[in-house]
Image (cartoon, rainbow, N blue to C red; front, side, top):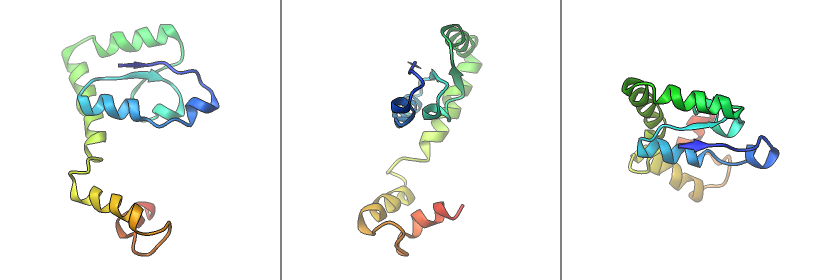
Length: 111
């Protein structure tokens, strides 16, 4: 997957959903070097750099699979099938921000 975006305020405020979707599908991604895609390893600023990143990803099966596995490990910790993640999700809607009963979310904020 390739995600070219102009480096501007609007795009810097976007979520990383394209990266997460590609990662969940096991598809490597080459993305614009903006804050939105900080977790994406293969980023570019110019068209030439984009082509170089694509070539690097596709240069060998090992490179391709290593990147797929790395990215999947990021998104794999976010599934709602994981009980811990479900509890965090429920806490978001059950208790207001900063509430002491947001136990699982507060653990994250403590780090």
